Image (cartoon, rainbow, N blue to C red):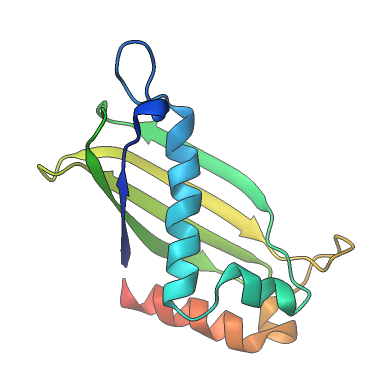
Length: 137
């Protein structure tokens, strides 16, 4: 599991001072990119190999509101990795340790033309890095 801290910006809130729901999806992306860097496979490195990783599915569950200027801890876990798919889960907690959001993202892997790739065959080092993260859970 990897943790990332996001400090809520004023512009991320609505007129009521509550964080707008769309930001949680952006924070999932921030945390995912930070996690990739932490395991030595930043998105720039992945893309240099000719691989892209589009999002194919997002789920979100809002548990409690957040406001400016709270800090949110976002934990990222590998739920499942298969040859061409990666599923991550996210848990966001406030400073009091209360869960404010849970979600999942699923990603596939393609070449620059959109042809689906099997990481276990075409980029085994990245595949193994993902598997190692799954085993930590």
